[in-house]
Image (cartoon, rainbow, N blue to C red; front, side):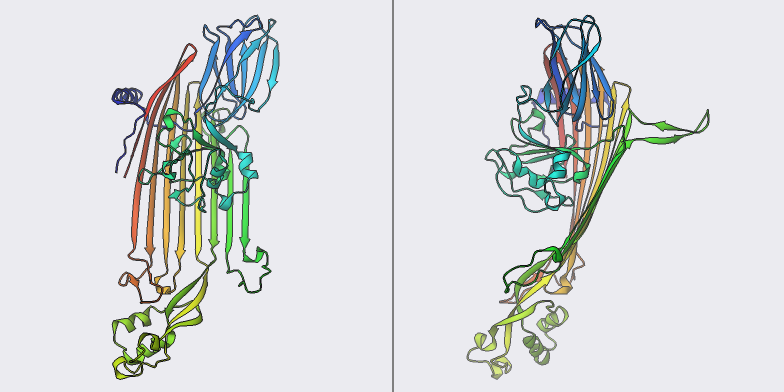
Length: 545
């Protein structure tokens, strides 16, 4: 099933195709959706044209420069979230420097009031906190930075339960982890269905093109720089959904090496004892969840004239890698009804060659601990039990019994993420990332011959090329590809899909099966600063099968 969605009408689609052919760029728009804008004035409130404005990323030292126009206005677009230093400099005025922190998709107003004087540097308003009222921000949203993700409790190390913290969100989130490629949240906003939720990683959609409101990828929190949860006034390029927009920005390397590692462990022995004597002991379970990450500049050996050396990636080439590994068993308990062992023995003795006896012999119930008898022969055959009409079945022979069971099926997962960033001069920026998540889960039933496993896999690739044509024209071209695959019923006896006995719990997993899903996403955006206005022209194409 293909879905073709554009932001505007037919003429806009034609413009998008022309732009794409003009650029011929096989890459993608990622998390670079933030911006800084402002006006430079003197102390008399007169605008200062042609002032030199320099923006520097504090973590990577990557810098950009522009000049104010005739209205004293400047703007930097297509920025990743992070800490920035903005410098305003013009002849006859003192240089001023401000620092600002940007979150995903945020546009910040940052104005300068320059005082007459020499070009001696003066640092003012040094703060990394957002102002109480940001006049450039119109979204109703919640941003959770990496520090908050470390401090907040994360159920199963998943970020999705944090959707409940955003304004206007209602509903409940089913338990999940980072290895589920088909996660559907029960939360919603704006009175809409959860099917209207959309999910993005680094600016590109990871929402299933097959099932609305379903996320195909959930990065490990160690790989996440921040999560933005929007519930209203979405940007035009986020218009596919009508409920909640969850945008994840992954970490990139910086000029310094940084890393982290976590290990989370629990089992039934760590649970508090119950004060109720009739409550059974906890069934065995365990969860071992390891995650780690490392990032920094790229250093590579270099050979050639002048002897051995190395490529120094500081200020231009960065990498970041993260991994998460899960090994767990879950505690499952329940009550089941099944055929009495005495009845099976009677059937073997009196009807050894029937299909029913063959099934009960080759696919026996194992595991439950019998607690009581639900039905005897006299309950089913009140007038004919013990007579030739019923093969002389004893009237007090148990037919169906009830028992309790406890099982500990395993669930294992592995996810790894890698991204690289390359800056070429001051006009080009390249970005690429790859993520793989896989899991396998054991399905245990009362007849062990029907025990089976389910496997899930997802591969996700993204790439981005951003080119600056001039201080007022910038272009981004984006591509992403997700492959989701699953296998069900691995190991079940294909000749017997299921067994159902009247009055007892049925058993079976049907037949083994698999599914395969491909999602493609192209995105093209041109940003043009014209006077005091910023225009964005572009489109997005989605397709999947």
